[in-house]
Image (cartoon, rainbow, N blue to C red):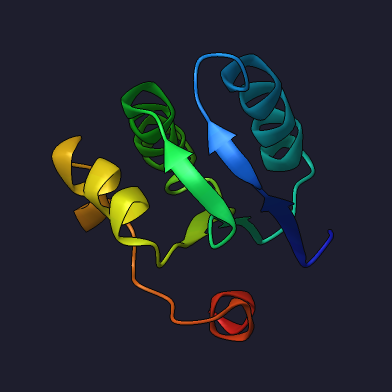
Length: 102
């Protein structure tokens, strides 16, 4: 079993990038690692749809042996997570090192 898989999102995660992000995230979750860390630090925009999908994946994978983790930071990205109600589902990590360590 792999340790952790990192998915890094750069730029804007809007309707144009959503299908690719969704596909990449699903593949990462299926790897069987103990965690998937989504690095949103370089993300300038996170759509409501993408934020909601992160929450759905988190809920679906809980109890499966693989944990979905987020590293965010930008106020506008954090706001999208808050507005959709998914922020409380995720522990806050201040760095990739912390997220990878769990």
